[in-house]
Image (tube, rainbow, N blue to C red; front, top):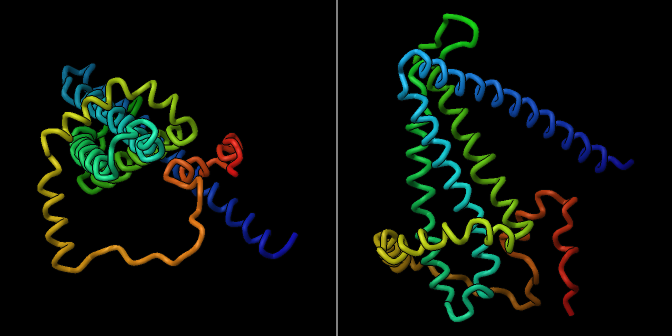
Length: 235
């Protein structure tokens, strides 16, 4: 085994170890988060339980939209052959509304003002401790299960993902796109671009890379999937 291979293996072990510790810590926090909502519901305080359910539903909607982004970038020309790149950009801009609103709303709904400890009469009420809890649990939940997971699933099998989610999600995004909620940002971007001379640089001549897009990049997160190998060879 070469030095480079040993270093790569050691790096992989360290990465997996840290990831496992982080996942276990998230699991403990999740148990506390769920228990606290059930505990308060059992003691006549339904607010935290309702907020928890709504937060999870919002995260689910976000997950659907995150995966759909990968599908649209990967298959836009095939799904909408008469559309332009501008149409795709407008669709992606409209989809961003769900990211902004849902992440903000889910963060507010998921936060705890106190946390009941299982099988005891003790509650965590320290402001700093609660802030640390809220800052760690919600971002990790969103990152792992509402962003990385759906993007990976959509990248591995875009057609199946679209069949499962497209019928409901696509019309919603199209409505948001039609009402122009992203219009202020588009116009601001145009002004900033013109003021700064922010234009695309000329590319060097050479053969473009083929078969590489956002879906390919996400699918490569799990090399064992061999997504690229499933495609017919290009001539």
